[in-house]
Length: 446
Ligand code: NDP
Image (cartoon, rainbow, N blue to C red; front, side):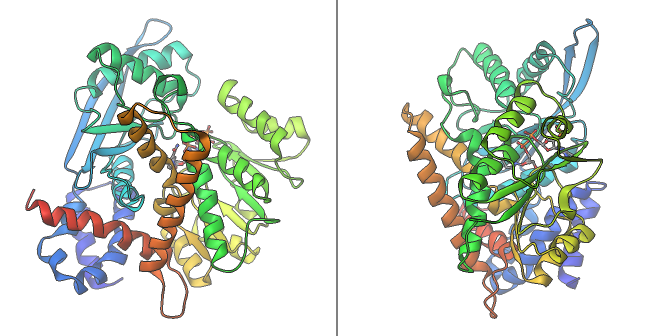
């Protein structure tokens, strides 16, 4: 490791002990940025990288709620307000039992760069709870959301911090959270994004992350004169991002052959077409069942406890969670002919996996670039809320495609190597950094 990166990381680890995912995210960025900062001493003297790695504010609170048996349950609630140099804090809420400070800080840190890349005026934040919505009744989820928002409402606002969804927080949860905020404040305002279409939401917001990651894959393929048409695509996850990535890949002529959840994956060599995807959406969004049922319904193979990276494919889209592709799995993907990875999830590839992609010279779109479509359309939802107007599907989708292309071009601008290879990791990190860093310089020591 570059000794400058090593020294910087030693101080990050000492200041943030035990926060492994946060260390991982910062190190990936530091590896791209430290050489760049050496060439641009104004950032070095102002300690921009040191400041960017420290949240502006961390809010940690108790979330007590009553379950259906009348018993009191207690969860932890968090909001990390990471950086507001270019706009109000913006980033999702995650409800999952694995949630802890280190995971949310990694997500908030990545969000700063991602939001900057979208070209929209949004700072970075992230929040959530160790609450597990799985197996809870709708009433329990509602009572939890109401308690969570009762505290969170003191810290957010349409010009301060605007949360959205993430793992475990979909349309149902956003509805309960919004309802409680409105009731507490007696105010109908764009306090969250991902809202329902009847009450301030934007068309294409649910689709945006999956569609955006697919457009990004297409943009990457185009640099090699290629397209998604006829490509075999493996997707992990079967939630919001995975479902709409599957839809868009199919629409663009590709064939999606896998989907997964935390229990295992299904392999459908014939492809997950529109009808089968409609079944998955009903299974996951309405019945809240397991992906295994797909295998039973369509008579395909199900692999319990496994991830889909040993299946032969041209393009892989990890759309479930962090660190879901190990170095070994990345090598297996490459051995099996995969030459394009577009990340719908945040940090799904381990550092070893990223090294394997870069060494093999494949197209690799890291999450902070490839999955920025979700927050970009959240930004468009905020714009529509401010104007009290609603754009058509076509208008939002066209803007999404333009934004994804701009993000891609920014990555090319800052990531193209002398031999012509596009290092999208470097491109996204440097491209996302400059606007935030220059704004921080303009604001002085704050
Ligand atoms: P959902 O909750 O809708 O779906 C998550 C999916 O991933 C489910 O299939 C879930 O399976 C699976 N999963 C979650 N945790 C694990 C785990 N530890 N191991 C294996 N599988 C797991 O979330 P989203 O689709 O919204 O989010 C997926 C990823 O995309 C996350 O990394 C998120 O941060 C990222 N992302 C999401 C955005 C959005 O707009 N929603 C925007 C940008 C990034 P199970 O049901 O069994 O838990």
